[in-house]
Structure formats: structure tokens, C-alpha cells
Length: 168
Image (tube, rainbow, N blue to C red; front, side, top):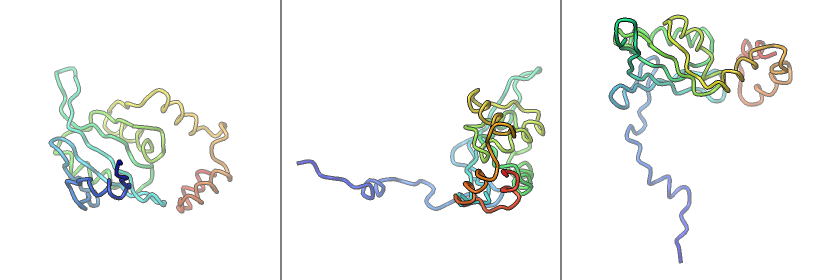
């Protein structure tokens, strides 16, 4: 007769090579050669987002341009921009950001994409579907946002008055 295994038993088999180690503040944690893990604060129940710097190169007019690809961006707020400014100084090793990759259209993933792309003259990589959804969500005529949406986000942990006002 097969033995029943619970989720807790399966979870106990997992191996976490970094243990409880987390990136702190604006510092990255190198998890593999050329792969840096960042965490940035969010002002709601989900209190952080994991972001990534990937050592990369893009073709330029004079050959390959060495730099970093950013995977996801954090939400657009002054604290996030300030944290990125520290990352630029402390973690890029003097190299530029050469591309910005957004995994999906949630504001904590795409929020600072335009700012990063403009600042570094870097292309944005995102699926056409997510780009269209993010564009539509940013337009006030789509039915996204409003008082009902602000109440919805507030019940799910968004407690930043400025963010809620923008949603309204």
C-alpha cells in the first residue's frame, strides 16, 4: 500500500542553499555568477518584490556592450527610485543597464520600467499581451481604477494614501 506524504513532509525535503540569507537594503546578493538578487520594499501586505540583475551584453554599433539586464522594476514611488539610485552606485560594477525585462504587467513589476529605460537608454522587453494590458490599465477611460478599485486594493493590504488616491 502506497505511503501518504503530506505537504509538510515534502517541504522538509527542500534544500535552501542560502538558508535565511536575504539581500538587505539596496545591496544585492549574488546567487550565481552574473546573477544578483535584489529585494525592494512595497507599501502593502506583500511587503517586498524580488528583482534581478543579470550580467549581459547587447550588440552596439562598435561591438558588444557589456552591462546588466534588469528583471522587473518595482512600483513607481520616490522610495523605490532612491533604492535604485543606490543599486546603480553599489551593484552595477561601473557597467550600464543594457535592457529591462518585465515578466508581467503588475505595477510592482512594470512600475519603474519607463524610468529605467529612459535613464539608461535601454530597450524594454515585455510580452505584447502584458504591454497592451499595462497600457490599457494606465488609461483612465478603461474602467480600471476608481473608488471601487481603491477599496479592493485597500482590503488586500495597500495602505499608502498616495497610492490609493492615484487608484481613485
